[in-house]
Image (cartoon, rainbow, N blue to C red; front, side, top):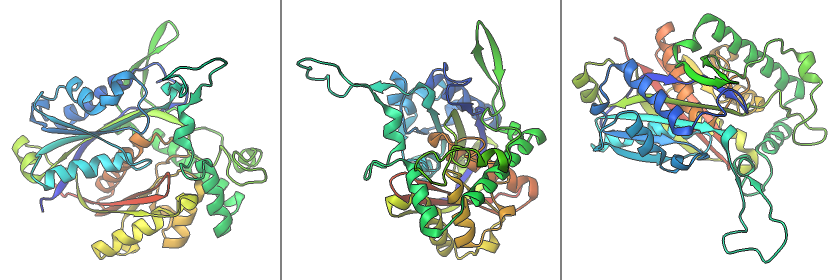
Length: 394
């Protein structure tokens, strides 16, 4: 089958919940980032024949048709095909996979994989009004509640993190220690300019004026074990999972180019990485955070590689316990994964996270001259996904 290559990732800075991006329209942000990815690559938008777009929570009227709308706004030709996909927390990686599958089956040469999440703009729903109410009050339902609850047990995703911590005996202190490290790494990556290489400056409203938004908004300075220890459990009385050791609710958008070798050669663009393979597995929904462990194991079996063969891991920090679990079960050294922060510090907008992680992996391999990176995460409702990428030597 045809090989799949990646290049030219671009994303917005991630905005805090109710922060700098709350008044930015969904497809405007996404198309701005998509244009930036194309500009970064030097590829004319007319050369893109497919866009695969992802979000888990459409929040504006035209976001129900996001792939087509974002593609057209980004300058893709009317003849370009458009596909909307979703795979919960791994939706960003699924956009890459689905674009790659179009390439492998000969239905595309150059595609755009993109995603956005604007949780600050999530609407409320009235589910009892379609056929009328006889009388009385009607209840507004927060759509974000639908996003953050297990569809089987109706418990919060944070409750499933508590289940994982209880089953495998991870302590609150271990989780808080990991969270402090995530914050420190994110701040260092901002200070060094590592993250800035990915970010597209966006002009946003600020009061009666405007500002340039170009730095991730969620990382916090001065986070210490002592400060985190004072936080109350967020999901269960006497529990271990807090707001401090959980991923942040954030907004943002991201995009990158996915193509086969002929497509990149035709446009005179050198790809940065090759998608070697991926693996998707199911796990008990009540232990959602276990997902990366069997997904990575299966991926390594498929590719006949070992943990020590992988130069770098990005494992989504849905909750600190997820990363502790992957470290312990798989033997992943902490100095080989999530060196630039993650969901706990930068935030976790599901439609963006996988794409952001791919950019981190590509950039890390390029700057360190490593060969392989694994990108992995747990998924709400009980799945795990892992992808292996390989640096392309130029």
